[in-house]
Every structure is written in C-alpha cells, then in structure tokens.
Length: 254
Image 1 (cartoon, rainbow, N blue to C red):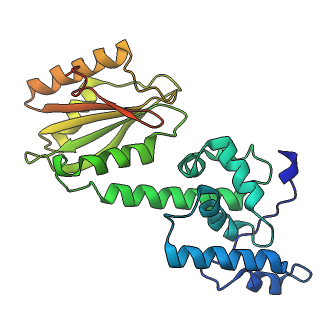
Image 2 (image 1 turned 90 degrees about the vertical axis):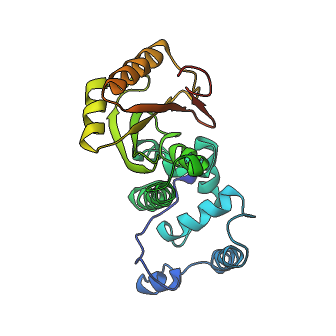
C-alpha cells in the first residue's frame, strides 16, 4: 500500500462551500483544477441522480473529499474497497483496521465513523416503537448494518411488548472472535425490568457463517426455558453473518 503514502489529511469545517476555502487559507496549497472539476462533477451527479447509480468507490470518494481536500482520493477509495469488500465494509471497519491502510489518519477515520453512526441511527429509527412483524425486513437490515462487519461477537436483545412492538434494543455482551458470554438469568432479569412480554436474541458470527454452534443452541434453549417460567416468550434467535442471517425459528431450532 506504499503507493498511497502521499495522501494528506485536514479536518474541514462542518459546513463550507468548497475546498478552495481551505486552500485560500493555506498558501501554496491550491487545489489542482482537474481535481476540483472532478469533485464538482461527482457532487453534481450525486445531487441530481442520488447514490443509487453510483458505484461504491465514487460514493466513498464523496466521503473522503472532506478529509483529504486537495488530493485525488480515487486510489485510496479503491484501496479501501479492495481491503474491506464494499462500502458498508469500509465504514464498519474498526479504527485499528483502517489505520493499517497507508494514507489513512484520524481525519479519514472520523469521517467514516460519522457515516457509520448516521447509517445505524437511521436503521434503528425504522424499527424502534414499531411492530416487529410488519417491520421484519427493516429489523434484519438494522442487524446487518450494526453487526455484520464486526470482528468480534456481540450479543443483542430486542425487547417487545404485548403487541410485539419493539420497546428496547440493548447490547447485552460482547466477546472475542468466536465467543460471547451470555447469562440467561441476566437476560430474563432485564426483560422483567422493562416489563417486556417477548424477546428476540441476536448475535453475529465474525467468520461470516451464521450456522449455529452447539453452544448457541444450548444457550438459546436455556434462555427460552428461563423466560417461559416468567411468562416471557422467546420469538427467535438471529445469527448474523457477513451477507446472510439464520433464524432459529425458521430452521426449527425453536
């Protein structure tokens, strides 16, 4: 990746008209016209046609423009996609992973993490306080947005009321690349605190394969049994892989 070491970064004001504002404040740092014209064309295409027709590397360029105001960012965008696969993989990569790419510093990482946080907020807003049955696809999208590209396991709980409306979404535990500690007693205790009537368990497999382990199956049954004693229903347990998910209920484990 040494070919990308020439990139320089600079934090831009949150709202500014153009990179030329920064260039004007930095003597000798005028932006080359071909870069300025390319950025103007790309922004215009985005505003006129939206993100749909744009390939991932161009959308990523738009994000990188703010962090790297006076350099051609296309090579860096392609390097990031080569490493992390797609746009979601790039913005979901950890700061530690991103720092390994030559040309990436704090300014780029901040921009990428802002985009990631915004996408997660939007996805969460589509499922909170809504009936799970009618927003199932949105719930799966939220799970993939927040968990599919994590490099360690995370265990989340979705708490539902008597009408199966999602009233709370909480991370219960996080662990290593192949294990996360889960305690059925704590799961049921939290459900009672929230006056929840039902649960959906969710965790990710960093390997990308959502096939449940024996430990996953045993743990799920223990939570189901403990919840049932208190009159709480376990609706499902979702395992999130890189590009797909597995439902315990659909697969006959519940």
